[in-house]
Length: 146
Image 1 (tube, rainbow, N blue to C red):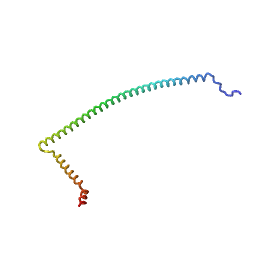
Image 2: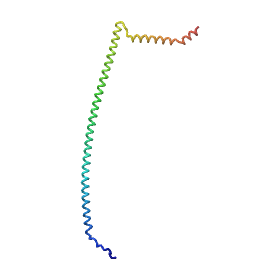
Image 3: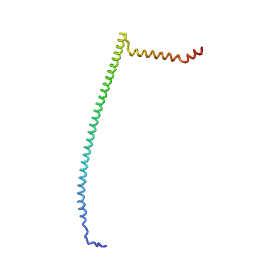
Image 4: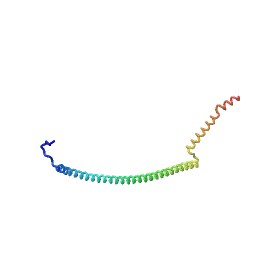
């Protein structure tokens, strides 16, 4: 069959020329993308370094705070122990003073009022206990003998 188109055939070189023109923008795009990629890599690397630096500083700060807290805890424990010791000394001193006052009153012929009240209370309790022990059983035995 014969070619019935009225258009002349295209020269073979025309598609090659248009491909070269298309290749140039693609190459420039690839170059731009590679440059952009390199910039992004550099930025990412910088951010990673910043992050590592911040972590290091944070770790250092945490260690400093831990040491300070440990020192404060030790200091607090020492102070608490000193206070306990001082309170014990005060307690002992007060007890000794109380004993001295009681002894002085005894030497003067007076007795400690609280001691007298306690002795009187103790003697009442012992009399009650004696009465409770000699209750119904002993009474029943004496009645049985009569």
